[in-house]
Length: 457
Image 1 (cartoon, rainbow, N blue to C red):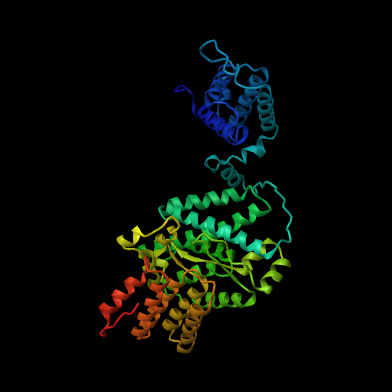
Image 2: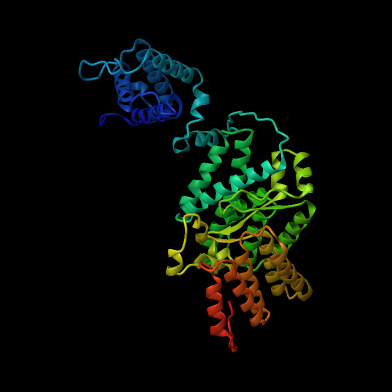
């Protein structure tokens, strides 16, 4: 092995990739890398050294595969050093026939199969290098007219998958996050139509917004600027649903003081809420989504295909710690909601508490309140605050009402209404007594206020 030149080493590595990705993708056929190595040795011994150069790499690959095909067909592969048949007794006749067919198919259609190798994203990188459109596996599912509630269940499943992905991203750095993004992009190239394609598309959009926001947060922390690539990812994620992608971009603009741009995005998002009936989707707590009562949502779903869910759903709004510089400071407390005593009271389904999570509609009104405060547009600021209060107490589908009450309490503090702020924090603790940032807000309120309050629970 140490005497192989670089072309021969590359050939061996590629043969192992081909074995894993194309000839034996499920690991059900026991072809070993040692057998691949033996075939390579025989091919090198029986050819001229001048063949093994980089511009002949593909020819060398095919030559080795032809040798492997011959070995499988004849059920004989000689050990390179001792007298032993490596294939003898290894396969049943059925398995041998299948493996022979797999190798033969690869040799005939090697260009197609090489572009499908997922190891080290080789196929995806080859597509980019050759500047060709990604190959896709056509799993053609027709658009089906299915009950509206199944669309919501589908959106809930996507949301749950994204939540589990966020828990993994929480412990990564920017470079590792990009690897997740790259993997999602690669996986999308192999699914053309149907539920799988729709699900990956939504998951991809949601992940893009998180990565773009984390990238923006990193550059804000370093030099208070945002790289163009961060905006590219945030823009690609705008159409994940009615609100979450747009709210993430608006929050980034708010964090760097671009109030007019943030306000424009929020105004467009609010219009989308009023254009169609919208169903909030949150998967933090494992439960079946609420059954639809809106006739309008059912009618809209029945008149459209699966893509309609991005026009009628609002995914939960979430930040991980890598995005902290893009999180309004009122929501940053939610990332540190738990004391050591609180941690003891967390259950197996409380992993979402590692994130800063809030329902989309109240966050929209809260961000409007903050922006209009900065722009000194008092009438619109008051309207946004009224909308936040109304939503907090009248919206039945809020999953994180305690968080909404916490940000509403902080708005009351900024309005110099400490007694109202305190009452909202108390209401929040009634919603969730433990692992609640309201405890922090009450302590801060008493520490900074000139008044003394009597807290009644």
